[in-house]
Length: 183
Image (cartoon, rainbow, N blue to C red; front, side, top):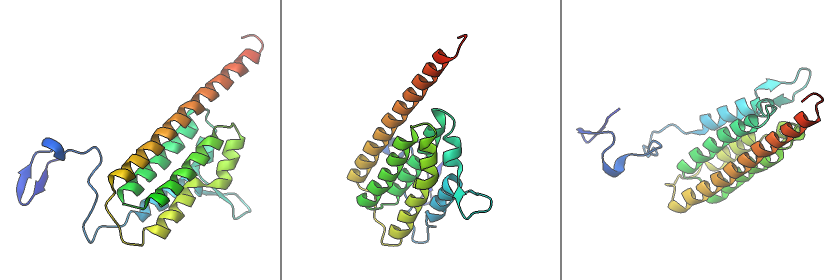
């Protein structure tokens, strides 16, 4: 959809103005992004209450049971939250802590069954939401080039871990098939 600027028409793909992600909001009355992080934490980590307890689980460990793609999908949701946090201009130390939570959850999540049990306990998205709540109340700043270099590096590491997890899952599946009589 075309954008208007200063009352004039600007084509959507003109020159260097085109972006893959929408521009950061700098308006004084812009809504905080905290509800987005709260929703991600709720759905991925705390959606269902275990009957008879106060303990909650989300979709992260449930979809993580699907070999290869489950952990990948959960990591992609977490990575999108990390990108949004960088767009909000959170300090690099917060981004680093968020990235560490995502990476720990993904690395341990590669291990079948144990990784999903770990994800139930660790709740990386809920941890990241708490970090967002703690640090988003301060003055916001525009994300710098070094913030983006850091986030891209973390995302590349995450992609490498995801690919390794898929490869290990496929290898384990192949080994199980070889052990099955009649194959």
